[in-house]
Image (cartoon, rainbow, N blue to C red; front, side):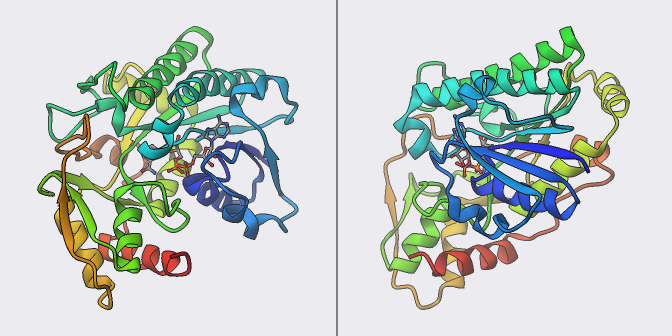
Length: 326
Ligand SMILES: NC(=O)c1ccc[n+]([C@@H]2O[C@H](COP(=O)([O-])OP(=O)(O)OC[C@H]3O[C@@H](n4cnc5c(N)ncnc54)[C@H](O)[C@@H]3O)[C@@H](O)[C@H]2O)c1
C-alpha cells in the first residue's frame, strides 16, 4: 500500500485531498498545525484505519518521525489574506521551512513531491491570461508579500533542489479554488459573499466590483493534483524540456472569468431568501485587478484535464455546506 504525507491535511483543500487519497487506496498521514484548518474538516476520516492525523508544524517537521512515504503533498500554509496577514512572519517561515522539510522527506524516502503553489506568484499581473512563463509583477514590501514572496521562494527552493539533487518535484500554481470546508471567516470572496448573504448582511464588493476572478471547484483541482502525481518522473521531465519551463510547474484553475459583482449577484440568486444588498468599499492594497489562468499546459500534461464543475453547480454545493454554519 502506498503511503502519502499531506501537510496542511486538516485544511480546506488538504482534507479533500486526504479523502481522495484514501479512496485511491493510500495510507495517509495528515500533518497540520490547525492554524486555519480544523479537526472537524477531517472528522469523517478519523474512523478509517488508513488515516492518521499528526498535529504539528511543518516548520519543525525535521524533528518529527512521521515514517516513510511514497508521495508528499505540501499544502501547509495559511492561504487567505486575513490569516496570512495576521501572522506574516509565520507565513513566510511556513513557505520556506515547510518547503525545505518536505524536500528533505522526499529526498530521504525517494518520494515524489507535489507542492501547492499559487497564482499569487504572478502578483498584480500585467499579462492576461497568465501562462507559466510569465514572471509576475509582485510587490516585495506590501501586505500580501509574506504570502506572494513566500510562495515564490518556495518554488525557487524546490526548483534548485530538483536541479541539484534530482528530487522528483512537481508544482501546481493554484488559482482561486472554492468549495465545502472553506473556512467561513477566511475573508475570501466566495465564503465572504455566501456568509454575508446567509446572514442578511451587506455584500461588500471592493472598488466597483469590476475586477475579475476565476473560480475553480475543489474536486477539479484534486483531480489535477492526482493526475500530476501519477505521471512518471521521465514524462514530467520531457514535458518541462519540450516547453522550456525550467521546472515542473503548471497552472490549475478555471479559466471562466467573472467580475466580483457577477459573483455577488449569482450568490444572491442562489439564496433567494436573502435580504442582503451589494455595497461598495475602498480597494485594499495590492488587490489584483484581473486574474485568469491559462491552463493549456495542464491540459496537455494531465491527459486532457480541464475543470468539470461549473460555477453555478459548485456554488450550490458550497452554499449547502455553509447553510449549516451561519
Ligand atoms: N484555496 C485556494 O484558492 C488556493 C489558491 C492558491 C494556493 N492555495 C494553496 O493551497 C494550500 C491549501 O490552501 P487552503 O485553501 O486549503 O487553505 P487552508 O488555510 O484551509 O489550509 C492550509 C492548512 O495548512 C495548515 N497550516 C498552515 N501553516 C502551517 C504550518 N506551519 N504547519 C502545519 N500546518 C500549517 C493550516 O492549519 C490549514 O489546515 C495552501 O498552500 C495555499 O497556499 C490555495
